[in-house]
Length: 584
Image (tube, rainbow, N blue to C red; front, side, top):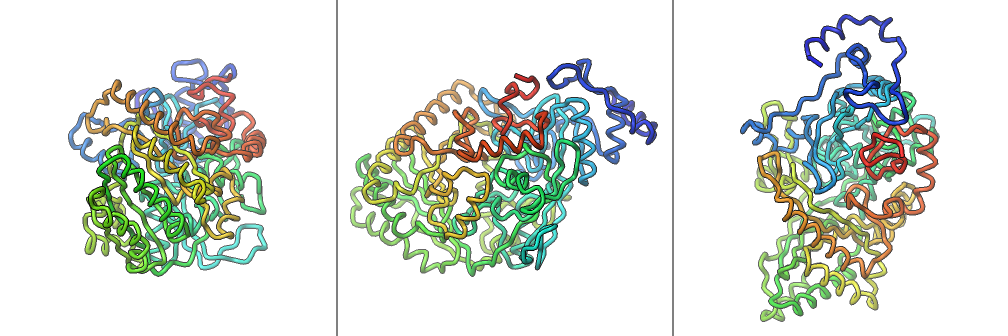
């Protein structure tokens, strides 16, 4: 459809025309461009009027333009383009493809208009906030996209009580569905001196992370983002705007806490509890290389014992990686400790390596830094004291003081060969079980690097933290696990002109799968984290939600009986073809 014709038609339509009934696509599937059920120009113009002129054909940026390619290395720029996604695709699974049309929503009313239109015309609907989905759920060709990026208002509350609730008020923050975690941390931590549990990457969308469960660097101390949810404004498949919480629509509210993004409705605003800020946030980095396989096995065993005795508590999070070339790479963070306290935790491992210099070399000496917690997302302070740690969004129209952690820039636009995860039960840390864990970790590392993300397993957290997480839809396996193991491989971004070597990618994917199979020997029956998992996850209902899936399925049938909201391996997707267009 020509853009001029589209715009002219939209201006000519009256309120009477808007009220005309929408034609429905024939059959039980969804309409595509060129089929009899696809909306006419006049239909699209009606939606444009209903959405305040915020509908447009979706045009992807010209990635052949060198200037655009350079910009496409900036995650904020990618997030500002509805035609791009933070991952470019996945081998034999999906590739980033723009929708046919996008509603750049600025209000819940805009979202509701788009939802009603998609339902009436049986359109494939895509909901996008931050666009970070590894599984490609925030894009689909031939679809209508609801893009919430412009809904980025932030309000910090000293005392918030959910609507209709008699609960005592608590400090909280309300965030529009288009907010990313940079917005939240600037307002809550830098601005108000409190903490909100969110994601580690500053450009991850708030709404998507919460709906997936939402692990962050300090989840052992503060739980998941989903566990902090107090209230959400959401548009359901019937086009209603609902305010849901533990009192109003409590089942739907529970489903939004970890039941999967884009599955039960379109979140337009959410309110999260905030927490007292600790005195310090900090990090610890260390790399030790073993000179032989047997020495590396001993190094892993020493670390596992150290973790069980010194690190298995709410202070510590993030990851340690075991590599094929016998390196143990520590990249951990902590909260509530001084530099000297945090350094003392690692002394037994340093003593172990020092006592066997013939077997070990410290390639990166232990570096421990603690700083006042309020400074952790303060761009001015970080540029002054740790300039290489962050990369600022230097575009002229950038959000003030926005930045991303420099290391996270490696993921912008990548093409995934494979990505797998598994929760590791805390029972493996018992002295009698540690050898089994070490053997599996070592065997897996022979095939591909294996990272343990300790903040994404909640065992070791305080009882009240665990209780709050258990009141979410996230698999109970997360509360029993000391870590989430992640094994993955990606190729550089096609946005920059790189053409993935598909044969090499397939070989890497096989290595990743072989590595996970070797690791699974010690944890054969645990689940995986829905936001970070295998696209081809077997028995995904059990893996993502365990016994909670049955309740989620009932809620899905109640609030979305026709399956308007579809995502790959989302609740209710069993009734659709893999692309979400055909009833099965």
